[in-house]
Every structure is written in structure tokens, then in C-alpha cells.
Image (tube, rainbow, N blue to C red):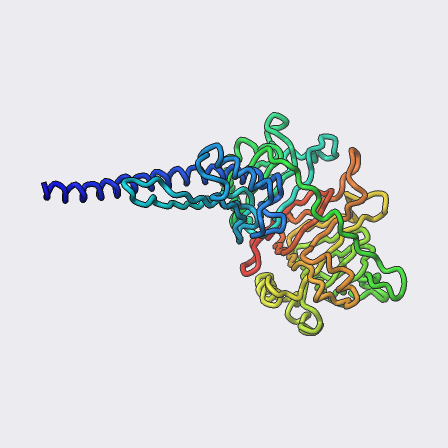
Length: 468
């Protein structure tokens, strides 16, 4: 009897441990399931509410986010009170995540204390890095635009290339495969591949073509809403020089005769300002190499063009970093193309560069663009050549008075005037870098009404390859 009584105590203790432990494991699984469901329910609202927290990354969650999580827990695990549910916006996820923490204490058996279980669930919905878009295509699909520019496709890749985007891509075109076999996005070559990294995503208002499926990682999000409005609609166009004392852009004569700054100069060093006839390299008797000091260049018609295989247009450092004499030796017309690229990448590094320019492409007249012929208001390379530009940095602007005036242009490299806007009979000229030139661009290309077409041949490393 004594031995039985002692054994019974041990059996009861083991029973308490088994039952309590089992209850704890079951409770934890129930909490995890409920927490996951709650986090997903709250994450469904992240895009609609424009992020988890109104204050931004890591701030207190919006009331709607908390309510969605609590409602989900109440449905899936009603035994857990709201006081045991903690909803937060985790820092470091670009306000695109919501975290739900649950805790509860299980039942006790044979007077043993119940086991307390706790779980954490995090759900993501959106871009998880603090970066904006690499490409924004605003055309929502208008079949009446001229020259077949109807948004089907709005994003077209013609070549067996591999693209890597560090930021997201959004295509506002609503073209579906029913509207056109091209859809809103199409890749023609079977060898094409695209990767989006750092949490970046490709969002398409319509659909991508059938032969594009499987070539993009992660898979693009189709039928995406809402459409993205013009992110640069509020910035004001640069002013041309009108009178002495204006903190704007004085008129520059780059002619090869008279008082033109390129008279007898090759390479020719250009300074920021207004260029009424545009900028062209390798044209007839003009210079083949143009070196642009940092600042804003207003093209008052005529565009920017590489007109021969020997044409070169390069952004170069400020005069305090590289004198005129040094620039003309470093980027002499006799230096081989490969050496020019290497020298430029060394003197104009991607990070901390003092070579930034912003080229503003305006039409020949206020009422219409010139879209054909040698004087077209186009940014293009009609032949091979070299185009090497870094994005505008107001801190290095050669016109000191414009550093404050143009600070909103930081990181722009090309900007085509928004007006006159394209309509059913008149298109805007394209920004075309697809003529076989070596093209390295860093910065934002902004053409609210024009086609942007980039290609080119490979030209080195350390700051870009073709059409970077």
C-alpha cells in the first residue's frame, strides 16, 4: 500500500506534466494560426491605408490596421482578450509590414500551473525597402495617340538582355491581352530576363503578354490599382535668362564662329545656360567632343544629339576639381573610347560625383514640337558615340546662384517639357538612346508625354553598362 501510494504521487505528477505540456503546445499552435491570420488581415489594408503607420516607418499603427487584426483574432480565437493582442508596425520594413504578438496561459491540471505561450506573426504587403520607382510609365492607354503610341505595350523590351532593377517599376497602361496580344508589357526575345531586387516589385495596371510569363522575378502584379499619378507634376520648369541679375540660365552661344564658345575648340567645354538651338556633337564642322560643366542646360529647340560615331557628350567635374586644361587633356578627341569611359568613371564616380547635369528639353516653339528632320526637338544618338552623364546635384552647380533655385531638380538627368502635351495629331519627340552609342546615365529621366527608348552597346563597368 505504501509503495502504491508513493507511485500514485509520481504518476499524478507525470500526468500533470504531460497534460499541461500538451495543452501548451496546442495553445501555441492555436495562437500562431490566429496571429498569422490576424497579420494577413491587417496587411490587406496596408496599400489602401498607405502604410501601417501614419507617422511612417516604425510608428504607431493606424486604428484601421489594429481593428482588422483584433477582429480576426476575435473570430479565430475568441478566448484571447484584446488586451493580450499587441499590434505594431515593425521598423526597417518601409512601413509595408504589420506585426501581431499574442500571448495566453493554458489550463492547469492536477494543480500544476498552466503554461504561458506567446507567438509573433509578421505580414508584408508592399515594397520593403525605402526606395521609390526606377521606372514610372504614366500612359493609361489612349488608342487615339499618334504614331501607334497607345500604351500596348507601354513597356517593351526587344533583345536578349538581362535587366536588374534595384527599385520598383510601375506601368499605368491598362492594356489587357484582350485589347492587344502585347498587353501592357512585352518581352520579344526568348532570352530576356528581368530581376527586381531589394524587395522591389513590378506593378502593371493591365496585363503582360503571354510570352513574357516566367521571364520576370518576382512575377509582376497584374491589374494593379490605384494608378500612380505623375510624381514630378509639382516641380516648376527652369527659367531662361531674361535680364541681368536673374538667378536662372543665361543664353550661351556654342557656335563655331564669331563669339561662339566652341570657336576653334575641340573638345569644347560648355557651361550651364540656355541653348536656343540645342546641343549637338559631331555635326559638320562643329566639335565632336562636348564637355558639360555641372548645372542645368535648357535646350530651346533642337534637342541633344550625337551625330557621328566620333561624337562624345560628357558631364565633367566642376572647374575647382578639374581645370579647363586638365579636362581637354583627359578627354581629348585622340583618346580611345574605352580610355575615355575609364577616365570618366574615375573622375565622375557614381557616389559623391561633382559632374551632375540636368538637361531640360523644350520645344522650338511654345505651340508645337518639331519631331522630324535634322532640327527635331529630340534627345537622340543617330549614330554611334559616347554619352556619359551623372544626375544633377545642386551643390555642384557652376552657377552658384542657382544652387538654391534648382535644388528641387536633384537627381534628374533628362527632363522633357510637359507642354505642348501630345494629342490625337501631335506627338512629343522621343528620348532615344538606341542607336548603338555607349550610354551611361545615372539619375531620373522624366518625359511626361514622350517615348523613352534606351539601348546601346556595352561600355565598361564601375558606374553602369549600356543604358544604366
